[in-house]
Image (cartoon, rainbow over all chains, first blue to last red; front, side):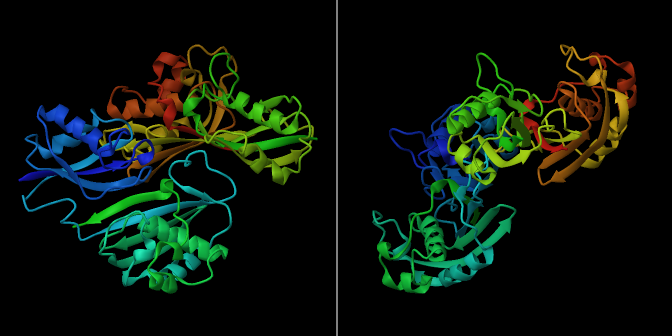
Length: 242
Length: 242
């Protein structure tokens, strides 16, 4: 048996999930808290790398053994040992066959845009300030071109080495909530920077910087066909499907 | 004519609105931005002092002369000169008779409680984490005792020197929004720490720490009759009525 953790974090201060030599990572910070609580070293595996500055509302990770502390006591005990910007929401005992990354059937991200010419002092780190008025329905309409199974090579950071770039996108839907627009993106898997490039491309199509549609960009299969990478601070891992 | 500004700020980094010798204040920070833009010194007056760590969604202040820059250009021009946690939402030209403090007919605050035994990594500075389950309707019911015109001396920080402590409270209403509870409090004016003591007292009545009702505490007219001062980080000035 293993122990799996559902956590949330504000990614601003971190170089992403993955342990990095020089910068604080969520993985290292949480691993330290678990090891401090259990008094032994553990191997902590996560459901995905996230980029520097990206947040998570629900991120799953696990240790390769049982924690040995009752599941219901783990969140509070670990949260006492964690900084304000990381929280353990839940701990559950799972079969040895479970792996937070390989067992995941898909994920949902949400990209948050503050769509106003006025900045919000409460969201500089948790939304992308975009000044020109946007229409949520137009975003959804353009993004419909992403739905389905495609080779998303055009939407992968150029430096990524991954060769299997076919993914199935099941949701690309924008909703307005006052001066905020939330874009929900679900897929069976994501390439490096994929959501941020998908969002940046739709914004570039709307602004006229790109004059072709999403289907044509997918077809091109090269990063330079797509648009900008939208900034990290608007992106949240929202759910992992198992 | 004068220029009035509607601003919002996250108060975490500030010793409140009012200029302080040793700590950064919202007033001083905004005044510097205005003076930098206009190239002359101005006298900036606000609608209220706010405590250290308290936030504002809508705070009004004014300068004792016309800015001389078109009202619609002021928010962007000032926001470029302000840190992330202060934003000018609007600027309007007003009569000389306007004073952001003395012209105010009343104010609405909102006090935000995260009611969960799990902390939220996105709100450590913008909500009070209260672990025992709360019922919003019970808060509203107990707080109904505040409504009306009363001497609120029991709900004023002991160190305050104010002698006229009669205020009219027109709203004390709690709403649940997921794991958050928002308590809206409106009055024609507020004493020092009044909202935080009102909220802390209701929580103390619910937890059984205080065994009398709000009416009896009002009647006692002394600070020690009331409950704790709820923490600053949950409090937002939400609206000013003119």
